[in-house]
Image (cartoon, rainbow, N blue to C red; front, side, top):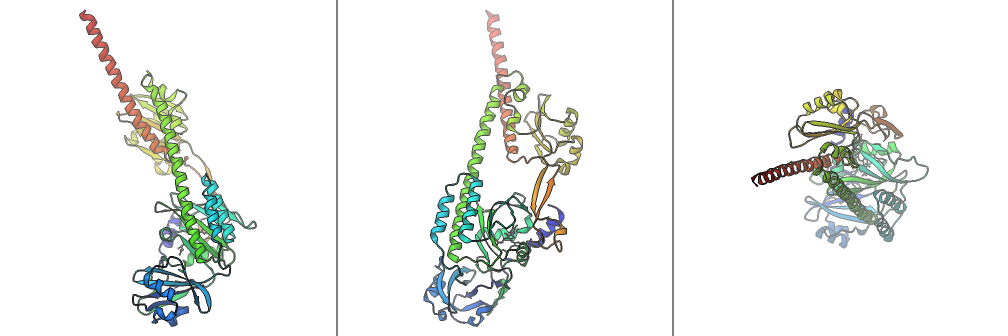
Length: 492
Ligand code: BLA
């Protein structure tokens, strides 16, 4: 991460999004204490402060508040309008949120059930992702529905998209980590769905009898107002409203599905709940698909390793067995070149630097495992010795001096960003970007990521040690046997 992005990330992470002290304009919030008294209210209902919830005159709502049993919203009439009341507890108060039914009204439950049934038939990650955004766009009518995947360094990528034809495509674009800062990601792990009904309507402040309304925790609230930074981001993108869902895998936010619209579009509570269930289903399916391909890969690698090492026992020339056969160490550890040093003899295959500089590198690395995907920035002293090598993987073996060294050249990769992430595309360094036109940057001096190859190479090293050990034992045993036979023969 560059220093500007770090500063932005730091700043964006400070926003206290759980306690904004206000709600979105389309609804009303009441906070009820243990005695049934309304102790907090949004300004548009502040005349109810100090009243008992019973005075609202809706027994179903009163029961939900007292028992905390309402999972589904309670249908009430509020100021003459049909509304959904959503009830949850937070700290010592019961929060009741009142949302008028959207104009689109009720929704067809069967639509989401159909989507769950159809997406459960998908057999690859790509197919599943494409299907789910198409289904959700069809059900909700949002202009654009995207799925993001978060990479290990926190930056995101749009991995699926369904959109109105006239909108510019975002599929395949990457965006920086600070677009969705860490405190937001932490909140999205527990709160799966979020609505932003309008980027224009100002929030409605909360007022309270006693406590400071700014401390009321709205983490689980439907009406929570969102970060002004994010609202500006959305306006810059031409989004007037959004609805988003978290993809959570074993307690980690691995992605999101976001719906956005140029107009103000809002979904009824029950539809949002149903879509949360769909998101949970998709998260499970993606996780199991990934797990299956990981296991398949492991089984495959194991089989190939056994194939490579089996002939070793019978071979007089270990180096030839590892480098010269139909299968070589490079089939197990994909790299441009390799050096195998065993019992003081070095042999190389593929594209490698000259032996002299490699030995100098090994001297500096010492006898511990070493891995790098970008020598030039991580170990400029080594990069200088072996120019042309971007990725280096060193696997020392048990026998002192024995080692496997893998080399990878640069893999220049062009990454398309969702707008230039740099400072010139922002009014100031801490603001959201103003242009989102695809902006290409080429990543240089890095090799292809080693990924699981690091563990696989370590495992290969370990099994090779065992094989070498057994081979040495077998040779000793054979010698002993010969000695014994010779002794017997001589005695006769
Ligand atoms: C939140 N930023 C978000 C969210 C999205 C994005 C999807 C979550 C909102 C939600 O779930 O409803 C970003 N939206 C995107 C991206 C696309 C999109 C990448 O449509 C791609 C097409 N954001 C900034 C800067 C800051 C910032 C500079 O750009 C801070 C200085 C902050 N973004 C920010 C914060 C949140 C956020 C604080 C949390 C909003 C909240 O839930 O309160």
